[in-house]
Image 1: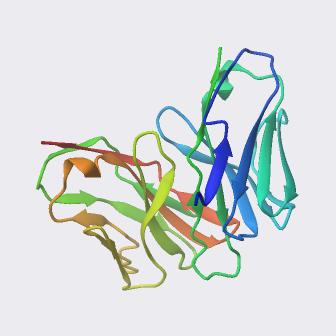
Image 2: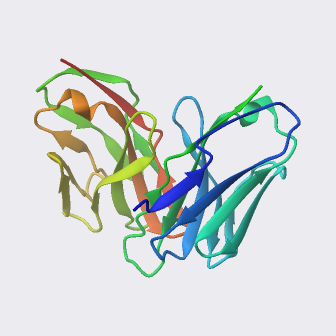
Length: 114
Length: 111
């Protein structure tokens, strides 16, 4: 069973379009994250939700809006896509009560904006 | 501020060579420390972890020891394989909303 899943795996779209990426975890975790990984593999935290409450909201354009309908889902909506948004986006989850806070990552969504 | 720094890559080794990837942290406290591995086209996977000073994490032949005196968590493997080719990330985690990832080190292992 896939622990953290993302859809779609690949997303190719044109500048100016609006798109969404979905994430689901079946680990029973209460915290979920969105990361952006650039072409040099640098990993940047974008958002974090704990029990559906926004916890981390790093400096990202407000064209990016996360939405957590329940603890198992965290979606990422992107408005007015730009060339610089091309990257791989990873969803992750963790459980607060653990003492180690290890994160479990999804397989990633490669977004290409043309 | 708090951060995690790891050696830049790429690191290129021949099969069966010894591997070390350096990782140091700067912290006001004692974070849990992790190594994650990212194989081509995949997400990050937890490789090993250590939660307190002198702990040693190990998995798949990889090891790392949490050294408080040098604020380090270097990743080592005695004999690398081609299948170890991947990007390795060091991370320091205080809690669910305070954590730091290194910039990643790409490892290429040649037959």
